Length: 210
Image (cartoon, rainbow, N blue to C red; front, top):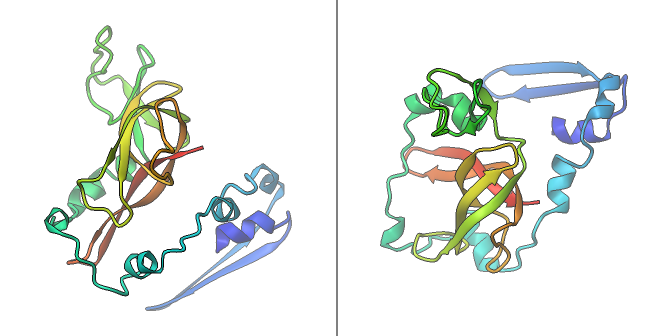
């Protein structure tokens, strides 16, 4: 709601954000001239403009857990998230932060002690480098009908980034036949899995066509 409000706000306005539940938190913001640098349409209104209308009522019921679906054996997977690992590697998983070698400039994900460049192999030479805003291109891809999906097929592939680095990622916001090698993509933060046993929703980064 705050992000949506900032899209239409003007410099010098005050915005109050209140949250209630097990106590109450109130935050007061005042917008400045820096608001002009905010990407208009890149947040809530942009997502709404790119939305896809779903006209299948059975899918609507399934997406919202209003009917019990027969998912088959391929869906019988324990999707437990290792929360200790999620905490330790929070920047890598939540921020898509990899590394960039200070010696040769090679970017890689995940960050490692040894540079992935075979002509470099420098040790402990990587600085944090985020791929979240990096432009990418689909190198190779697959449409998988075997793994379970609420809306098959599952698309995934190898993404290469303009400034270097590769990343195997799920591809979202596409229909069958709408993706190919060379397709330009951006990284988006989406739901990866739902652990229904423990009530935990896991988020991660996916590639979406630009």
